[in-house]
Image 1 (spheres, rainbow, N blue to C red):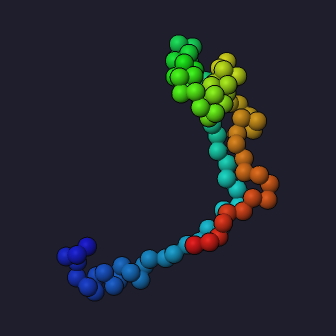
Image 2 (cartoon, rainbow, N blue to C red):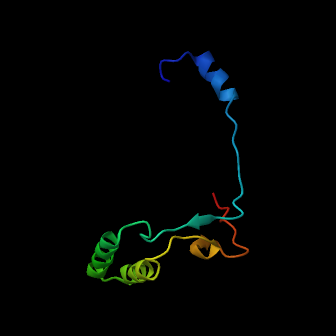
Image 3 (spheres, rainbow, N blue to C red):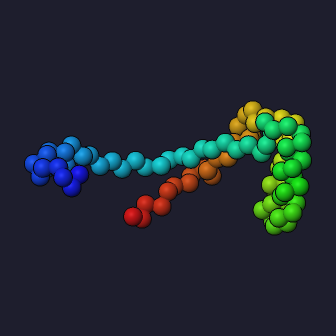
Length: 90
């Protein structure tokens, strides 16, 4: 852009529009290796066991619990708590 004429830049600047979108809800889905082979899941479980942290133990339990099914419904989705609002501080 440094080699563009100043009047061209000014024309482009008039076309820039700022938006502010309030976040009312966040929704995500998670998977814990359900789509992997049993051998791959065993490797994931072993790797998590070697880490031996609170987080790896929790994830290892999830992989074991959900090893035979794919996420199929809302139970398997993570939702923001009711009434959650984003911090509006800029």
